[in-house]
Length: 396
Image 1: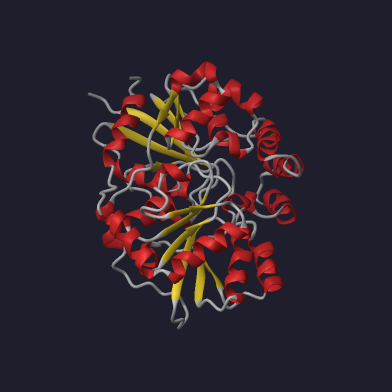
Image 2: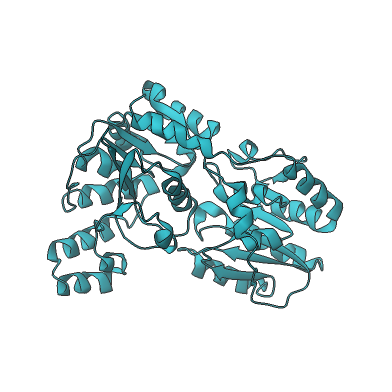
């Protein structure tokens, strides 16, 4: 029997939860039954080296120079012989200047679709692994009888453009998301397509994570005290700015701890300015990207995720596997992951709420131990989730 040809699409493979989830899916895929191509808009990112060698990585939709800032990108693209892509990059810059995320994605795609090449072959199924451009590309530029999309967050909270997305969702055979709350959000926004919505949880391998966690964790300092960790893109969504005044308040109370943040993103400069203004540079440390975050999870005393919205946070799932006491803000899907007061804390989504919760955990080691013991009672491995994806690919 011939193998089914499947195309996966994502924007890049930077160190985010979606990218990590995609790499995990591809590492578990059955290559005896499927021939898999991976199409990225940009062939870069920390996780690119972790893609299974059995995957055929296609040339990127945009040259490497496309990701530079517009002043550099425009002339670099012309110099490399891509005048049409240089024009695209210029127009996309203007399209993305204002509005909600949905408004910007809509205008940017309306430009990009005029310049971007279609898929070079036909496939038995195409899987667009995130919202926005990957789904738009799968619907309009790929020939395939089965088209599957993923939206990893709470659609209502994400600020996407419902009227624009409706036409694309209508052309998908299935739209997957990562929690029941996220599925409910899709049903609220697109009730006419509710029969196409499926929950496929982020795949977790506890054994793999614990093996990776055996490597040493280099925090790059000689700090002695409680270590608080967050793994997050430095973006508005992740709410790091909400937590910084909380750190300042606890510093003023004389609590001894340090907050380590693994991740990169567009908000770094504004966050650093806020840290200087609050005079908490000795309490906060940016760690950048880390190819293996698990030793840091194992070594931290508290895992904190002060997000404004999430789908089902992979970083929180991973903290649960590593049995770390967890502090979450009350974003819409927080209660899908932890049971507040039993295996973690969910606090009000403001600086005062974060400060109160963090102080509680810092001062009460017995509560941290209780949460860790509760988390240790569960096995979070769910590699069989991939069977749901196989069923959708086969049109079942």
